[in-house]
Amino acid sequence: MKIVVTGGSGLIGEYVVDELKKFHHEVTNFDIKEPKDKSVDFVKADMLKIDDCRKVFKGAEVIVHLAAVPNPYNDPPEKIMNANIMGTTNVYVAASELGIKNVIHASTDSTYGFWYRKQDFLPYYLPLDEDHPLNTQDSYGLSKKIDEEIAANFARSYNMQTISVRIPFVVIHGTIMPLMVHYNIPSYKAVVENPELLKDGFWVYCDVRDIAQAFRLMVEAKGLKKHEVFCVCAEDNITKINSVELVRKYWSERILFRKEVKGRAPLMDCGKAKAMLGYRPRYTWRDIVEGQ
Image (cartoon, rainbow, N blue to C red; front, side, top):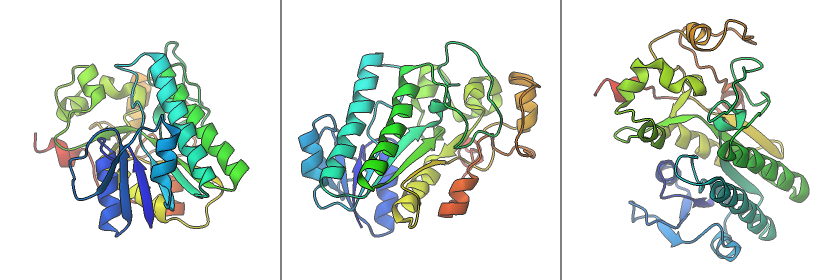
């Protein structure tokens, strides 16, 4: 298939591009930044310029939209909201005008509202899933929540297949992620050994290679509803402690568990992606930490 990946030069984007290439898709990387991989067709373009989207998207069958301000650490709210909401709007408008029926975009577990919250609150239940209410308190989470609504709106209005992918904390071998830089966390080993650090994300994570797998499966999926939301994560939490014990210690003993969580099973439920897409996470934090 002919696929345009916005943000294909980014931390996640380069892995998604590589995964799509391995499965013989024809990929164009749409980004404002030059990619490391010079073998992929690259167009320097800006998602905030809708004519760039119209020009680059022409002839594509699927748009994978990863370009965004990916966290709230270094940018003011107005920049985050403009980039993430208007950028996503431009992507969907251009795709709809060109008759492109499949758009997949990166959302985030920040839509639940626990990351970057200003007022404390408890989850309605655990594990988190696609149906859990979204109670954002910050500009980044709000921008991504609105992006999911944009996707649903275009699916309804233009008979498109749109997918929102809720991505948790990402681990990449050899890369210190922005969250780790912001909180001065020196290594993944430090994350694993200090559960307090990822409390707000309920210790949910995903290896970037499994995220790439999920996007490729969504590109190839058939027979989905007009708009779908999928959670993706690893098969375990990012600590050495059982998940229920973590919740009782760092959150509350009053939280409802809607399904049994055994051992270190994740506190996000990606069962929908497994059932509908055949998603199977292959990597754990041990693949990275044991070499540190």
